[in-house]
Length: 261
Image (cartoon, rainbow, N blue to C red; front, side, top):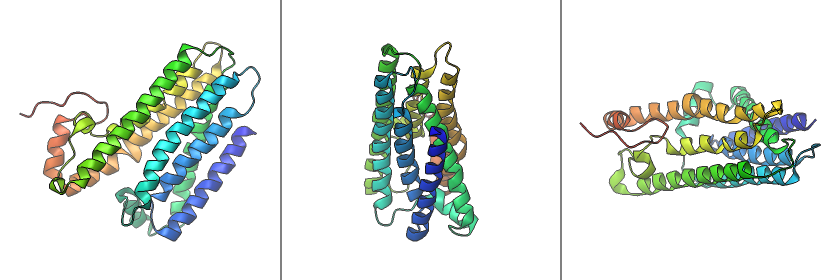
């Protein structure tokens, strides 16, 4: 019943997102609603009673999801709220769909399904049937906090780069962006590893469900809605500079940049 309720709520919330997008004309509201929905529903699911589960672990999982959602959701909300901001990914989809009609609603229902996958992963970690709370929970907290801090730093570095008129039409290759072409996406993916750290345990088959979260986020960020459309946009607007950037900087996982030949 918990997962059914979460599925229905996710569909309702993303339908509301569709209405807001149609009214405002801004596809960026999709990400605001998606992040908030994941945070709300995953935290709620984590806190629902389960026989043998540790209430402390349940609170930890709920708190981690909430920290992630507040940071990321707040950032996306501020970005979307700004007058004149246009998300090129959604503008491309809007043109392909011919507006924000039923095709857009269907896309948001797919996003509702991804919400449910993340809720399942968080629930699996929260209700591990083990009363002991120890080093694994501590490691999970450390992973999530590093991920949130890293993603926040990447976002601030990009914002500072864009604010400078001298950087117009240039490619950001400073700070974390000199080590990864998408450090914000890397840290976003990293944060979802916190839940398998807590959930995987011999004799607890449901713990394997926690791996759905990092697997899903890797697929979405690296192969679907993250890296591909952004890199296509950059190659369209800054082809020579971005190809040079691609040649020396890692696509996803941070590493020292290759020397310029």
